Length: 267
Image: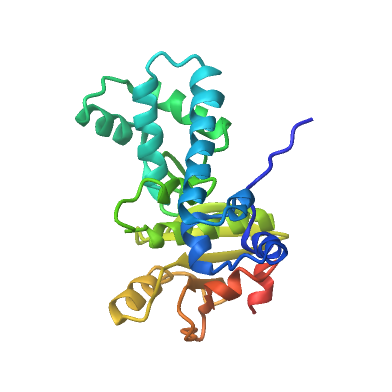
């Protein structure tokens, strides 16, 4: 028998941090994720060194060596590109084109195989996009999420951390931990809703945004829900502490979301 062991979700990491008397903030979690051993190191540089070693061990030992990849540097380029572009929509042909623009001659078939290796090693997960117009999953387009957002943050320069995409990635990881079946939803108007979360016969439509304090951002996120019925459960998750709920959309602050065990607690 095999069991997949995930990095800690926030509640687990918070409990461990209290034992170690480590000051854990939500921003810390947004950037450096849930690998528990990292908070055993006192300095940020020591944490990053540990996380880099962890990533190298997975990429080199668990994939390049085990799968006998004969173009290791090309594979590393792919892994770095995918990990730093988490929470985005991919297609195999699009990744192949990116690799070709950067001097690689790998084919679609190779890219598809290498992406499967990243999933087998639990570095990434993917979600298919479900279209109401096509009434089927669009398997040639999918969104990719890192097993831990640290794999994105390690590649960032000058502390320009990708908090917006890391936020969506963390929500994906937390919902997976809660046991929800997830997919990306494309409405009949072609708008994307980040997640449909389904469990125990209940369905939730979820949008994630770093902030909707600006009117333009608020309008963009709310517009995604247009066309859904009034009885559908619609949730917006942001880092804002002001409650932006409407008559049919429930706003949840990130700190509250990270404290609940089920989406039903949001109502």
